[in-house]
Structures are given as structure tokens and as C-alpha cells.
Amino acid sequence: MAEALIETHDGQKLAFRDTGDGPPVVFIHGWSLSGEIWREQVACLAAHGHRAITYDRRGHGHSTKPATGYDYDTLADDLAAVLAQAGTTNATLVGHSMGSGEIARYFSRHGGERIARTMLIAPTTPYAVRTADNPEGTDRLIFDHLVTALRADPKGYLAAGAPGLLGQAAAPETVKWALDLAYQADPGALEECVRAFTETDFRSDLQTVRVPTLIVYGSGDMPSMQANARRTGAAIAGSRIEVYEGAPHGLFITDRERFNKDLLRFVRS
Image 1 (tube, helix red, strand yellow):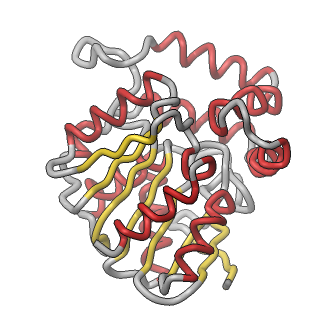
Image 2 (spheres, helix red, strand yellow):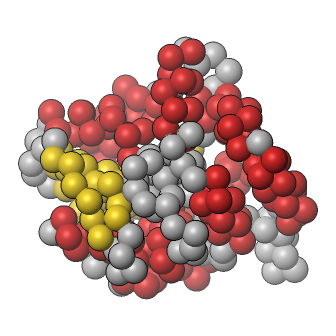
């Protein structure tokens, strides 16, 4: 595995890992986590003749942690920098939760260049906030309360969210591992990212995704996340949805054997 730093257009440094050889798969992690969360998928792909690329979003993991730049235009440009500097072509993009927005905005902003297919896991797209023309969204006050709780006690907020990510029966060492990754994120960045993924409207972005797309979610995830997945699927022409019965938000961790098989099958499709 080669570790390096990718420089963004505004001079930030993104921690970047490049493992294996073969057709590339690029992973975009969810809110608060880092590229290390994909370790089981990286090992699986590398063992089966694929190149696996992970990176830490700005403000997360071992990347630099600026005060600004957490809007989706900038985050999509960061993804573009990773793809360009890694020299990837015909890649599969895999995005979890918040990472689905980076993929959607990448397509609308960069034309889907270099991408062969996409997989969206428990996406936060298409639009989280309830508005007059988005009645299926959630009241903005609920997200305001989330930000208030996060600001008051970042570590406590992250710890309280672990069962939603990993399920109620997760092994203590798995919970500790995931939380240790989340604790590396900058609290200010986490707050800005909550605002970004809840307030950004991706409905038009999703219409620009014109490659084979698989959307995966767990029936044990929050009802709003399940609705997001179904709405995202409806917005991307020709996409396919796969439901993991009883799985939580982080199904690629909890159901990794099934997920890795599905991932490998999809990237070879």
C-alpha cells in the first residue's frame, strides 16, 4: 500500500492510500469517518486483482483541517483532484452516506469524467431538508438541534451515534475502532459538513449520473435514510437498488462478507 498526500486546488492536503493493481475502485467515506473505514473492502479488492484507492475528506482523518471548504462544490473538486493525481480512468466510485453527495456533484460539475460506474451506500441524497417543493424532507429544526448537540459535546455525539452506524450488537472493539477514526475529525469541520449534506439540493445533480449505478441500504437504517435511497434510485435513470435486511447505516462493516461479494460482482459488471 502506497500512502501519500494529494494537494487540492486551494492548497489543502488529503491523506491518500493506493493499494493493489488493476481496474480502480475509489472510495468516499461517510461523515466523521476516514478512508481507513474501508479496510476490509480494500483488502478484498486487492486480493482479487483490483486497485483500491481511499482518501480522507478535508477536515477528517489525517487530512488537513481548514476552517472552510466544506461545501459540495469544493468537496467534489477535492474528489476530482484525487482522481486526476492518481491517474485513474474507467473507475468505480463507491460513496457512503455523505460521500454520495460528492459523487453526485462530481458528475454535474466535472461531467463524470474517468468514471465507469457508481455505488451509493445509504445515501444522503437527494435533498434532506423539507421545503415546499420537497415535502419528503425533514424539518430544518431537527438538523439545527443535531448541530447544537454536536457543538456542545462532539465526542459524546459521535459515541451516541455508533449504534446507528454499527447496530446494537456490535463488538466493543469494532465500536472503538470506528470511534477512534471519527475522533480524528475536526469538530468545526463536522458541523460544517452536517450543514452541507442536509442543506444541499442534489436533485438536479443526480440526473447527470449516466453510468451504471447500484444503490445499497439496510432496512435497519433510519426511515429517512431508507427513503433517501429509494428517492435517489428514482432520480438516477437505470439505477438498481439492493436492500440488506436488518442492516444498519454501516452495512459494509456489519455485513461485509455479503457486501464484498456484491461489490466485487458490481465492479466487474
